[in-house]
Image 1 (cartoon, helix red, strand yellow):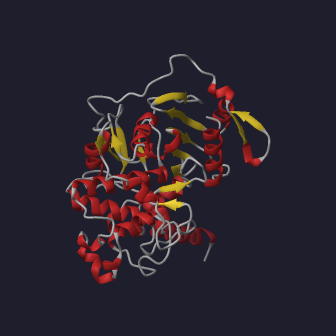
Image 2 (cartoon, helix red, strand yellow):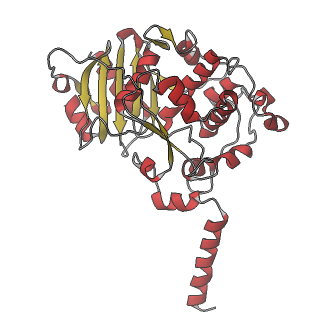
Length: 377
């Protein structure tokens, strides 16, 4: 066989592989690695802003917090100012809010306050919030309710013992392939693929429910399907009804879909885009234990319920949030590359950071940065 024929056969084999697998393989090959602008290349569902906006306050006089606060990076004494840190570390938005007053607001590197920022896995904490609201509304009974109450087709595969709490805590035992080399793996195709419903319909169990902690996106996506079934609404519609409108969001939001059109499914485990200040309003809801200006939008002590340890150790991770070693009971919702909403209830403090950080993403790095800032305030 000559070289031309060999090359032709190889090309045909590659094209056949790509055509026979999910279209997401082509997308994965094209984009290679996630970044904060991925949402611009994906279809999405729009969430309308509120008719009446809730506004944070601003200090009566200008402060110099960006120059006054210093950070020690990488646990050594090379101090930089907050302003310099924000500029250096690919930040798109950085906010510090205490007692409903915006003490620091910075959109460096050509960004601005009306530009959407993305969430990545920070969306999992917002999903936990929607689950609490569905319980408050009576659509869900409690966190111990089995998923088969809503998805009876999963019963024959052993899902009878999988609870809503298991999905939130990532102890469901659901099988999920995480290879980044295999472009048809769940890890790649959940993010880049176009057949989320089909992939979810084929789920099976790897471990008995409630016995192993295995953090992955199928848990959150299954929660989204349950919320759709329970509420009779698309995920974006329920978010608009329960969060975007009542919390007085200033801008529209967009939730990325797996495909175009009415059949598109929200990527519930990531990919919600909105203004940073609107995400701060969600942080304010968490900060006040689900109470919004006197109205209890979440079950009482919902945040404490989410943070409580369960029978299976999950480290610092609790139902979409990461506990921080802090005297002020701090926790944070976080996403890839440093999408952060840090909440310190005893200080009535919120710190938000969105942007890129490709060099060395580490949850411990961001926990340390947030803790330093909280200690300095």
